Image (tube, rainbow, N blue to C red; front, side, top):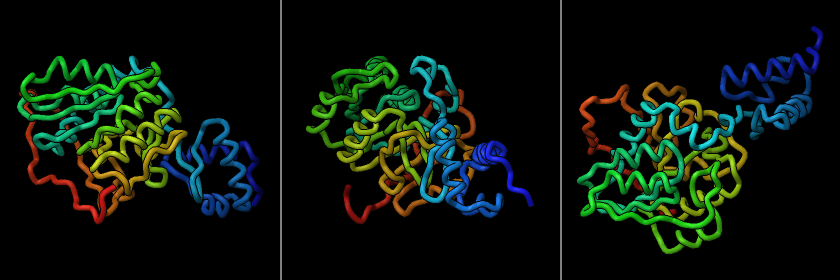
Length: 280
């Protein structure tokens, strides 16, 4: 059997990534009758072109191309609202909650129950504005993290922001994610953003990530935390292959299928944070 030409092989690998969400070097080497070193070179070439993210033993699709924050505000609004409803089921009275910059976390801010006393901390002006707009004065305390705000990120992530969070311990941190995959965990497009998210996670008793389907099985450029350092993963009602994401201390929450027109939020009191063998 003739070995496929390099470009043909690269096209097939790209198609497999799109179809299956990952490829393994050993399987590709056997299929194309080439060495694993050859496949690794192919994956390096695809990664250099921004078409995949190399991981141990193979590759994953890259995360959704970077989109301006204002554009993301109008994308998948109903889906994000449903994810928000799943996320707020993890909150309990008098928690200190961190809401990271991002449009899904903005949906969580709008979905917070008005009668639930919370301290909300955020690095994102849009989320702070949402809290001011919707929260009850006598139930919610708002703390904003300051500093330089890169427009593409939509939240403060620099040295000032890192200093601000040093004085706070979070009961739960809702982190934004540009990509999430079993091998790479939570990833971010920008290095400074990844460093800030890591610092927040280190100061949190629990970490929650709400992810739309297009982010599952993808990896962005910069690592944040692995899945075994997350406590809650909120996914769409029809998310697939969730068995790959299962971890002993990770609770996976499916968003409801469709929104209740009444706008009322129902808490699932059976959802509790798994006991950890040790605090982070």
